[in-house]
Image 1: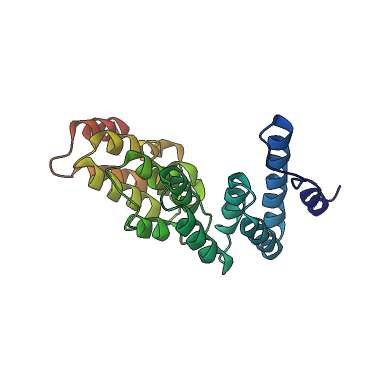
Image 2: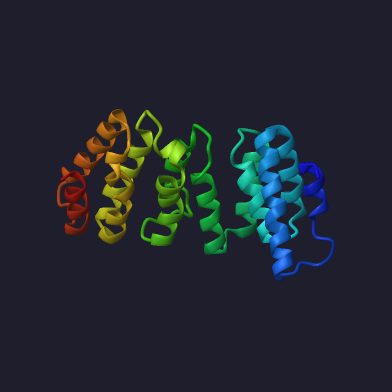
Amino acid sequence: MELAAAYVALADAGPYRIDGASIGRRALRNTCLAYLAAAGPERGAALAKAQFDARANMTDVLAALSVLVDPDRPERPAALARFYAAWWHDDLVIDKWFALQARSSLPATPGRVRELTRHPAFERKNPNRVRALVGAFAQGNQLRFHDASGAGYMLLTDEVIALDRFNPTTAARLVQPLGAWRRYDPARQALMRQQLERVLATPDLSKNTYEMVSKSLA
């Protein structure tokens, strides 16, 4: 069966159900949507927008939004704004809103993540919110975190230093992606080490973060 036809055929025919067959069908349908978007961004964005607008269930809405955050198209900011306006009061859902943007493949994602650290809903004293944005970027967006410019490494380092003042446990955990510097090419290794050394040079660095960084550099 053609992918587009499968996407249509797999739509829920009745009310929302949580049995295994229904869950599997929704998962397969949303996989079809992701493939359709990868093959044709314009068509994929149109399908995702229609699915997002239908608001049949949260699974489908999030799947549609995950497609819409990748292309640099008008549907993207509009969908993100609508989603936030509808769910701003639900912390768990807004964590997903942050994470989807952090994992976007767009070249501007490091800058967007930095902007989101200044969003009214972002709170560094909330570890879940930090993991949803900064953690999702550093650990779940290999393409943009490891951008050859080093912008992703610098962003993570800025957040580690800012967090260390009042949440050293979370700050130390965030160091881990930089600590894997030996796995990468010489140019990226140098950039990652440079940021680790910047953390180490921070005045009054916590014991947790100091140990994590010094062991990474040893």
